[in-house]
Length: 305
Image (cartoon, rainbow, N blue to C red; front, side, top):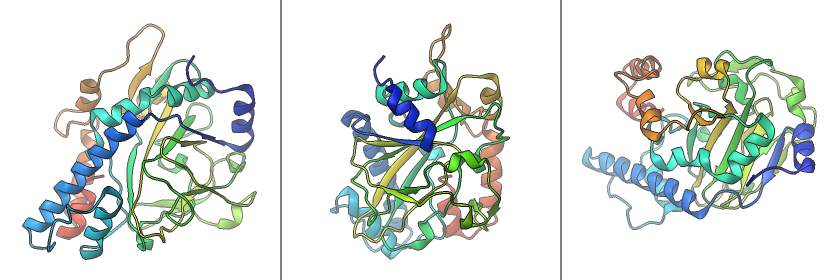
């Protein structure tokens, strides 16, 4: 099976809770997501320009610089996460990339589901408000428990990332501690309560486009500050086993591989995120209700969640 992990890779993953996979995300897949991100940035710039908040569109700038120029003129009001605006065939196809799907099947078993926690991550330079501190992905998984909630995160850069541009840092082996004490800030970002919980030295993980960092939902990780002159663009998706618990707890996901059923189509996945009729409608309406209490600028930034 394409993408199947070796015994040595599986042993390393089980020991450290993470694994670096080199050259597993195709150029075609990366180009599709990058083009989606470019469209989102362009729509955002035009909205700001039309409202008089932005002096020009900065459309002459390349992908790694345009968002930074826009945000230098119109700073973000809070940490930016793109989710609902990523319901797109380009993102859907990431779960079927052989190198990622094969790794997921090696770790979680042959029947696989796309978990409904996925994010686009624009990290402009020199904005500490965009840096999310140490956390475990289990914090953001509904009704997580050790028996039926195994998740595999795939963190995928679209540009070269290193410690200067805000790559991820991880604590190898931290998944063996279980769920750690946490707190949630005013923006709804949940992080660990005490960095003294570390069991090993943090490790920064530089990656190239095409690479992916995969890790257990209990591994401590964070993004480093982006102190470069360019935007750090990444997308993260998650796999789970195609089991009843995940179908119930993460209804906004979809079936990727099953023995006796075909994958759910993009149209079926998109229907789940329809604000009026989809299974995620209550979640989206809660976000919209929260956004209605905010300032216009904050509301615009929350609209992408």
